Every structure is written in C-alpha cells, then in structure tokens.
Length: 66
Image 1 (spheres, rainbow, N blue to C red):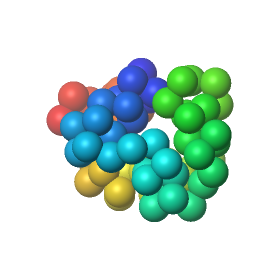
Image 2: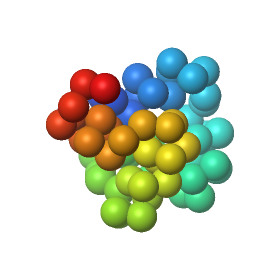
Image 3: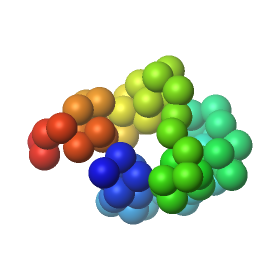
C-alpha cells in the first residue's frame, strides 16, 4: 500500500521522481525502490515524505484514507 500511495501523491502533485528524491535527500534509485516496493524508507525518510506531500504517516502507510 505504501508504494501505491507514494506514487499517487507524486503524480497528483505533478512531481517527477528525481525531483521528489532531491527534495527529501535521497538518490533517484533509492526513491524508485520505494515506489516499486523493492525497498522501504527509514523512519526519518517516511516523515520527510509525509511532510513533503502534506499527508499523514497513516495515510502513506495505508492505515487511513484521508
């Protein structure tokens, strides 16, 4: 669910993968791993992603739909 929500947030806000990666301080391939579900971010990176997209951690992790 996380990778799906992450991609949805990025597309909804019209960001490119490399732009999000740069904004949160990770490499492009690392970010691509998050979206594809091949890897999971550290807690600090999860917080950065939630802050960047202005959503809750619960939303990103699929615990809530709002």
